[in-house]
Amino acid sequence: MATDFIRDIVEADLKSGKHAKIVTRFPPEPNGYLHIGHAKSICLNFGIAQEFNGTCHLRFDDTNPAAEDVEYVDSIQEDVKWLGFDWKDKLFYASDYFEKIYGYTLELIKNGKAYVCDQTLEEIRRDRGSFTVPGKESPYRNRSVDENLDLFKRMRAGEFADGAKTLRAKIDMTSPNMNLRDPVLYRIKRATHHRTGGKWLIYPMYDYAHPISDALEGITHSICTLEFEDHRPLYDWTLENGPAPCRPRQIEFARLAVTHTLMSKRKLLQLVEEKLVSGWSDPRLPTLQGLRRRGYTPAAIREFCSRIGVTKFNSLTETALLEDCLRDDLNAHGPRAMAVIKPVKVVLENYPADKTEELDAPNHPADPSLGSRKIPFGRELYIEEDDFREAPVPKYHRLVPGKEVRLRYAYFIKLEKVVKDAAGKVTELRCTYDPATRGGDAPDGRKVKATIHWVSAQHALKAEARIYEHLLSVADPNDIPGGEDFKKYLNPKSLETVTTCQVEPALAQAKPGSAWQFERQGYFCADTQDSKPGAPVFNRTVTLRDAWAKIEKKQI
Ligand code: ATP
Ligand code: MG
Image 1 (cartoon, protein in one colour):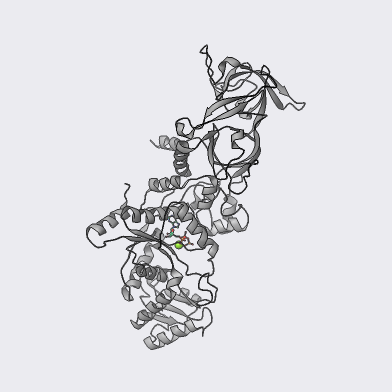
Image 2 (cartoon, helix red, strand yellow):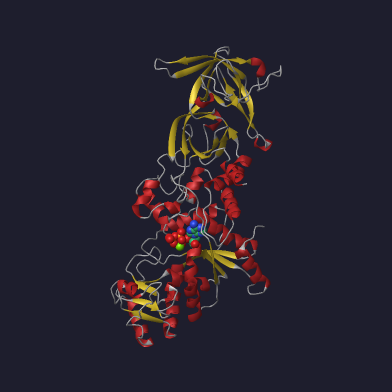
């Protein structure tokens, strides 16, 4: 089993008896769809719970009513399940704790650890100081406990306007850690919350609600990403100074960043809202819905998360590694089929016009349990435009005038004549076939240097193929400036729609979501939204080429 520094901590805590049972949580904010970065956190939190016989909670961190929505709550649950994890009855919402967090806060105030401040947010920011300049104490910092209790209750009751007052922790305005310079714990906000409606006018800040929610749920290890490392003292302070029922430990790990794609929810939302992609499930996006529609399997994503491991160092992971995990899975399990993406017609001059036959083809070269199918063959066929050259090219062994190639599962054919239209465009390749080579082998033992795929023109079905490339035209998303400019870095060639595709008849009834290896072309799946029986639409999931192996080789 893979291990890492977090699993080491968990194991040591079990061994020492610090904890008898491990409890982790995955805490998404329902303000967007989950992406592959979240998958890393899901696999880590649910994975640890599984491996150490513990439990993992799914908790919606819904403390910011403005950006949150039930659409996101639903999609997040669907995605976590799809990825293969089960929170059982442990589904929670931070908003369910609002009353308890409020009660916790009254205790904190009674302990003299929090005060109501009348400064505006600008004044608070101004007086916070900087890394070199200490902060200035608020003039309201020394209010009495009674006055603070009274004002805080009146904040809740709606006596003050939004932003007129905040509740702040009383820690240390000179702390070298900016997060400890009397951070805001509560703000007044009149907004409709997706669960509590208009009940609350005050909302706890994330940094404050999070440790309390963890403690209320008995979380043992609160695993989060590296940018929260500087917030850990506030996490601990919150639990030390109020009536926390237990003391979860926050542990940080590096977030996932992948080449050629975006992981920022804000930027992804912008692409969706401005219709630069077809929606959250656009197959170019790194969202779990996008990856699923693209043809990614949960097993491949889990394998990826296991291969990248967990560290404390931010780094950039190659998309090729993700693709390679997928290829391994699809190669082992995906049935084969033949599809010609950019067709050119072949006419077999010595094949009878009224004859058709059925040839046997295995559905998988190594797994007989996937069975076999019959492929119709006739006088007119389609082959890939790219599998033919009129003039011989060195090292090009596919169809050229006068040479033989093998049609997969069928016959040897030889190119006799190239037919062109008035504009010089190739319209037909006149060939002959050798009836003695049925099934793909010559009885006289003669060899060909290439095997190409094909479909019978009479039986094939027209289909649409969507060929995807990277979302971004630059590898490192960190090189992209903020603001609006990131859209200039979108790859204009990220989607090519090919409507000329001809597929073998077995694919006519392709079930949306089902996947194949189109021989010599790549892995494809029938689109879950646009593919219809008789009019299939295929997404190219990933190419056959093993780019990752090449990268690894280069590094050796
Ligand atoms: P936001 O800025 O909206 O908070 P977020 O990506 O942190 O964005 P959350 O919904 O808070 O979104 O994330 C839920 C959990 O997933 C958090 O624990 C977060 O640390 C983790 N997470 C988010 N992005 C990544 C990533 N790229 N790699 C690993 N974990 C991530
Ligand atoms: Mg977050």
